[in-house]
Image: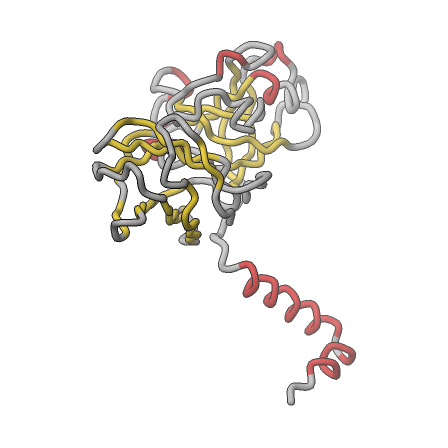
Length: 250
């Protein structure tokens, strides 16, 4: 029989080490979200962030999708051709005491900042929604140096699957992803088919050319950290294009 109680009581440091590792085993392996890096940040979208709606990730209305105003458009160096959509970044204003405010924010990548000026490759740049920018810097600054790092995303509820398109062209928008936040692989299964790999069309819109009408639908999604979650029978057989369904969460 294992003697964990003896180990725990005699060596608190060992106890803490074991608990931490048990937590990692229970919740699965997490990617190394990385060290602090340097970049710059500007802002766009207006005081209510209405100008940030839509965007290159395909999320549409960021309010109704649950992303709110703590969002960012990423430069080419960070956007990864859309694969970074949904990733979360912790950020703080750095080395500009005239304009910086204290504290940090966490933003979600929801858009692309096209090449030009500060968003030119190979620069790492965040064009923040204005309300997000104003949490770390003064409006008059316009642009500030920042430090940032990837962090796990925290979401309410399950992963959401919005089914668009038409017969033989199923375009599924995947939103509200916790953990790594950015999805790098998706498979779909109808109740009358096997698992089929979906191709990424743009942003976080994933495409299948199978005729899946009248079938319950299941999804397997894999995030950038390698973790995978499967949601069985998320959409009932009578699903319609334009509907959103909620599955399991990381």
